[in-house]
Image 1: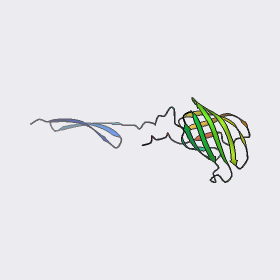
Image 2: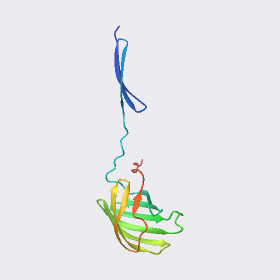
Image 3: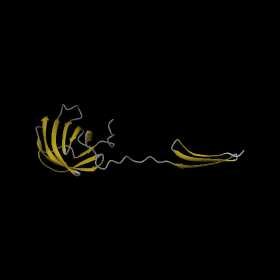
Length: 142
């Protein structure tokens, strides 16, 4: 009796093809690489860390972007709020301190990738942060 069995098996990151012919086994393996998540037009909603030591909780509602930013001591040193408008990879809006320094002004931010925003312009009081990072693309909700 002669049997022909073929198939594909994935084990521990390798794709393997198994071909069995008359008691002869030929096993081939090639690595399977994980791909970086792609999010070219990210939803900005979520927590962002800035280079001023603060945490910024953003909420995107259409083209309107809101945030509340708090200092690294849970907002005891400073807290600010922001309302801006997103147009492509640029967000422009107004911010104001609600605790701490009492500053206010305008910020222009560039979305530099799926996980990074950078300050490109501003006016008014000095703003502490100039780079925001969230570490990973947002995961789709249920």
